[in-house]
Amino acid sequence: MTAEILMLGRMLPSVMEALDAAYTVHRLWEAPDRAAMLADVGPRIRGVATDGHLGLPGDVMEACPGLEIASSYGVGYDAIDIDACRARGIRVTNTPDVLNDAVAEMALGLMLSLCRRIPQADAYVRAGKWVSEGNFGLTGELTGRKVGILGLGRIGKEIARRCQAMKMQVVYHGRTEQVHEPYPFYADLEAMARDVDWLVVIAPGSASTKGIVSRAVLEALGPDGALVNVARGSLVDEAALVDCLASGKIGGAGLDVFEAEPKVPEALFGMDNVVLQPHQGSATHKTRAAMGDLVVKNLAAHFAGLPLLTPVA
Image (tube, rainbow, N blue to C red; front, side, top):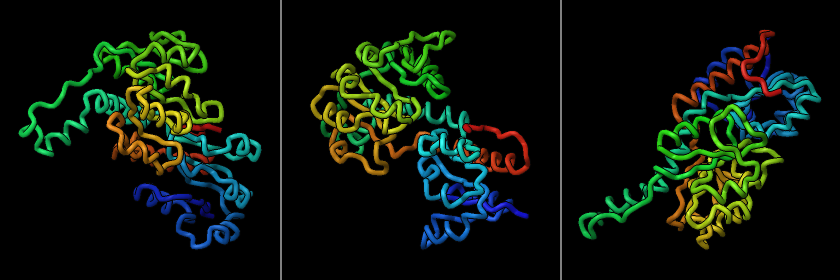
């Protein structure tokens, strides 16, 4: 008998086609009455296809007593209660590694855009000011600057390598020192922020990292420092960040993620010292296709009784 799975949100057409071909798929986001659909199909659901933002809500878990696996599209799984899944025997997978390069590229893109004022210079040319007002003003550069990476995991290491290619000095902070990595380790995040020109946030989102980039850390970064966040908005005290940017307590920020996406603090829109992105870190054709392929392959492995490709729990 074909397994029945629940898809919590829209995915790439290729992913939905592959799942439709292999399973009976129920699309929760299309249901006119979410609770009614869950009550109807929940007892038959064996798998869930979700993403890092939708996670595995409590009402879905409760409605699906026979749930065996949640295959998540994204590397972050902070929206999934892993302990609850383990207690219920629910396997969880994510899509690591395949998005490392794309997210690292976004981090460097934000750094370059902020440092070299690329959005402002583009607007300057488009407005005809190069002709009417002369050359655009001078900017900073990355060469010779020190960058502190918060979270030297898979993506953090890729960012570090790219920063080295830009002739930057790399240091890092994390839960533990990685003794075989060539970069200096800081046990104290505030101390690292005080010593660097750039602070790049790429640690996982969790209860332990919520607000880890506090007002004290931001003020330690200082008026000549800049923050780049390509991890989760929850890691940064967003209200403190807005205040520090407005008051000049930090020099600037490149932000791909926010606390309550897709809502972005309106105060940021008028600031000239920020570069904003709509959570595009992994949003390339190549990377998203690879992520979708892992979602499909993890479900297939589970139902075939084979080892999962990228298990979390």
